[in-house]
Amino acid sequence: MWRQVVLYFRTHSYHADNCQAKENLQNEYEADIAAAQWIFKPMGSERTEIRKRQMATTPETPGAAQAQLSTGNRGSNACCFCWCCCCSCSCLTVRNQEEERARRTSHELQAEGIPNCEESPAPTLEEVNAWAQSFDKLMLTPAGRNAFREFLRTEFSEENMLFWMACEELKQESNKSVIEEKARLIYEDYISILSPKEVSLDSRVREVINRNMLEPSQHTFDDAQLQIYTLMHRDSYPRFMNSAIYKDLLQSLSEKSIEA
Image (cartoon, rainbow, N blue to C red):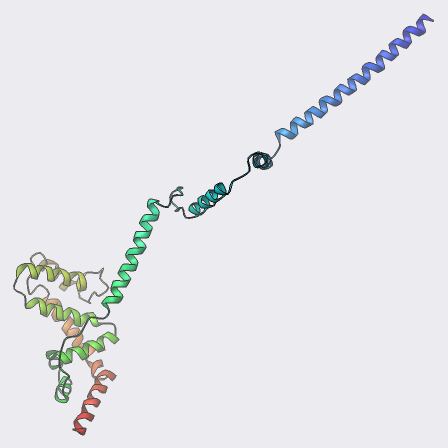
């Protein structure tokens, strides 16, 4: 009988210990699962939950929302070389200055327009007929130079006439400081390879000009002026005599002469 009682208590104790062990293992497993979920929880969802809790505890005011909107607008204007969001960014200032300078230059060029021609009376029929006799007679009269210059403009070579006229003006100067200033301007406008109005000169003439520019005088550009004069004579003058500009002018003067 005592043996049966001892066996009963031992069996009951074994089952109780076994159930307790299973319960402990289950609790440890659940704890491990919870810890793993917390460790591998995505940062984005955690930040979202934190933001939700903050919004729930401290509601956003209209002033704060407006400030955030203003900050976002400034941030979109930040330049590519810095991370500042202020409107006084030095890079933006430089960029604005460059744009303003480009607009000012474009406006000045538009305002300047085409340079004015020489003042001269209307040519007579005899003068226009004389232009066909020689290039020298064409270039001797202001009316002839104006008509020829108008033709050169259609061929995008007006700088040849402008350079020749600038050299003629330089020859009329006697003041040394004025000569030096005009020579510098002629060089920058018509000789420099950086100028959009550069005339076509060979290397020999350019070397002569560079030597003469050490001490500018009225005759600094004589060789270059002669070369451009010859170019206009041989290349542009024959086409001018066959152009509509010359023929229309000659026809209109002839009709006026007949009517008179």
